[in-house]
Length: 156
Image 1 (spheres, one colour):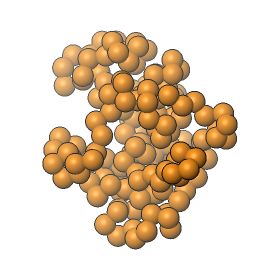
Image 2 (tube, one colour):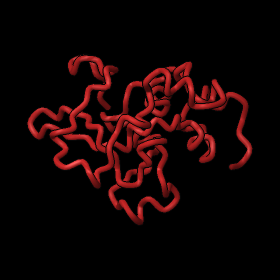
Image 3 (spheres, helix red, strand yellow):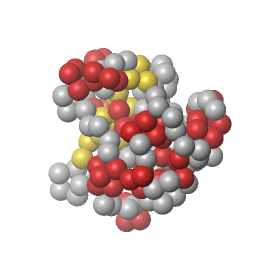
């Protein structure tokens, strides 16, 4: 990684370098979990089923650099995409900074490691299952307990 500016996570997301953007990710793994969208209402339901590349014990991608070769529909989050997708969790640093909010106080950029994030229950490590063994997604719906009621969600 290249040099990063002090407290870069307080800058607008459009001002971040690629290395700073990548470092903004807290590594929680929630964006790597499958979601189901209601075709009629657009409501997004979360599951605990992880992409086959996600290490379910650590919540880290096992082949991040080449993930698109193995999972063609994997999305590379960009500032533009973060502003549009409704499924990023409220705790996501990308989502929070796009909305003008600070990163969570448990974020590894502030604490120096992921222990506080795991203690806060923000990480899926040890709480998800690989898509290779999960079976039907409908059997794995979860409520992580941090989404506001639908009527109060911000949508972009």
